[in-house]
Length: 116
Image 1 (cartoon, rainbow, N blue to C red):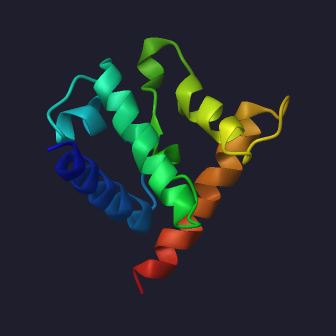
Image 2: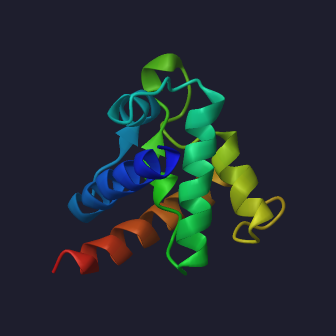
């Protein structure tokens, strides 16, 4: 079941990336029938990113961002950056926002090419 959820969310994120769009955590979680605050949802995002990294693709969950109405910046949460550090993609001390903007651009560029 988790594999199905992962595949469904990954496919949805690929379509969003091809269109050049982001998605809020709540919407992404609802897409797979989970709570956007659940540990399982964040593990699902981590698993997707690990899969993408193993396939030599950019971290597609850069598309999944906080809703700025909550008083936070419209960008991924700490888990995204912790994983990026752990995978060696982000340098220690590197600005999170700058890393995210660059990774988001890589996602749009990679998946935009796949749409053609």
